[in-house]
Length: 371
Image 1 (cartoon, rainbow, N blue to C red):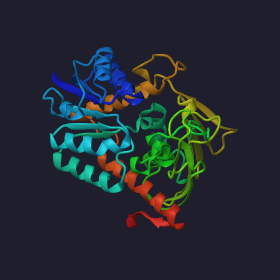
Image 2 (image 1 turned 45 degrees about the vertical axis):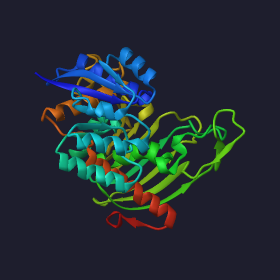
Image 3 (image 1 turned 180 degrees about the vertical axis):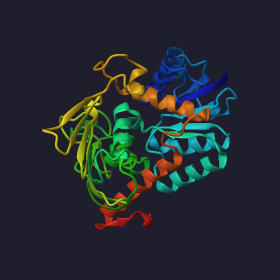
Image 4 (image 1 turned 135 degrees about the horizontal axis):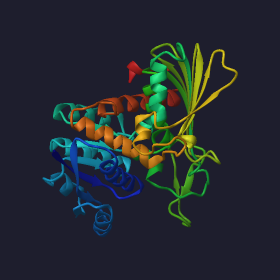
């Protein structure tokens, strides 16, 4: 069995999620590769060493370039702030290594384009962390739509809202920097854009509006210094899909009471499907002639669910979705699948986000072929 060395850059929330996913994938799935946790890197060398020891990585580096140069590393997982995705991924691709990068792919469409071209030239597997698409219930929804159970798709209504920036005195962070691809659209909306494309198809035209509600935030917790904010706090968009369907999109990180409200309703000529990530083990289905919506509950009839539990109603969570994403990645590296979001598909998401920003700025409909 081929050995595959994993190198992880970053030790924050997403770094920990990746570490758990790699460990869980080894325990849950019969993988075609033997995973070895080869190295972990963080700018804080002491933290890198502490996390490497706790998470089972063989070595720790205080410099991410050292991890990429490490001959034991075959796959580079990038979980750093957005502005570091480009230099790290480009260095890994130049070294001929596979790349697993968190979303959004880059801080500009130009960077994303360079990354997809470099990946194509390197001929390596790439994946971007749109892990919500690996939910067995989302895969079921896609299969139902593809099979025509809803008839011709006519509308997509999607929202991704949270409230972690709702407090106007929440301090500034890198998410507040335009140069770091900050804002609600990049941080939350990109997931929803990827989901819309996965379930309904390509978008051909957009119109949008965005707003910065809190134009200043404290420079740090309790600081008397305030910093100006220019990124969007909330975004609304109208979508026209290439297949003729129409759509709406809303994303906000100011919406009180919501924690992970990635939700959608997809309607066709024969029915409607509804989903909410805060209830990620459920779909609601209405078909013509039904007395009302049915509640479809995840269970072992779905392979991704069955890998974790033999009984319905026992619930998957965020870390299981990340583990399923890692499984798909490993299968792709072994030449046994291509269901995930690679750099090419992630560039399409960034292109759609760029069109939405142009539409909001210029207050007009924007064709995707303009971008």
